[in-house]
Image: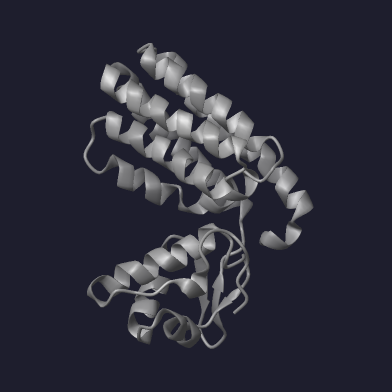
Length: 234
């Protein structure tokens, strides 16, 4: 199983027995999202189990969870493979994400406080530093953190987890697109507009800024398909 670049090496990670099922799932999911395990690549359960120092059972459980998210595809008698990117599924996921996160940011803007705004701005400061140093992994983590913070600011229990699950189909695309020459800088500007709208308690402006931000991915996706057709399903 050949692993690509991006973050901590898949082979360097080991599993603590107490929470091995969740840890195996998290490690494999991160490897897929970061393209260490590339679209179309075979996943051999026995090799993964050996590399992570666990039995096949938690690996099988993790793969089933990832299949439910559409991140892997299981073919009986053939094998298990990292799912290739599918434009139709990504389009649906993006539609759901826009609906969910624009609704969340409306509530966040309504409920905005000085403390929430300060924490969002602190995140933006760290994003600027990551962008200046071309730290793609650090920037991506801060990007996710910002969206999670906005979901939390909406004040709805469990919304962060729902939003994170709905992002599964497009997380890989978001990370790949950050490597476009200007995308980190553009993303930072879009995030700034989002935070400014929340700070001003401007519900409509916040929702419009969030929708524009999420919609940018769809426009860039076709460019990615042209450059990297091997990542996409037929």
